[in-house]
Length: 85
Image (cartoon, rainbow, N blue to C red; front, side):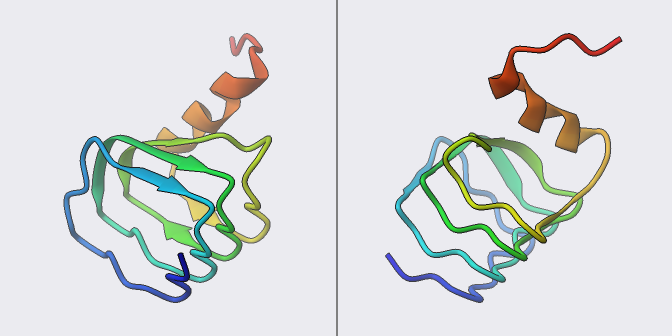
């Protein structure tokens, strides 16, 4: 699905799945994304600032240039099965 440059800003998208989507340059800014997963998506230059609850597998999604906020961005590392101290 082509959703390039789509503006989801400020919406609530819970229990959703984006699979094989082109979301390049899309905005999820300030979205509630509880239990929302992104699988094999193009998220390059996407804006996730102040978004909460998303699950992005960085091993199968393109994320170069995407923007995230701390501390939620730390959740991207879960797929790597590392320990953060």
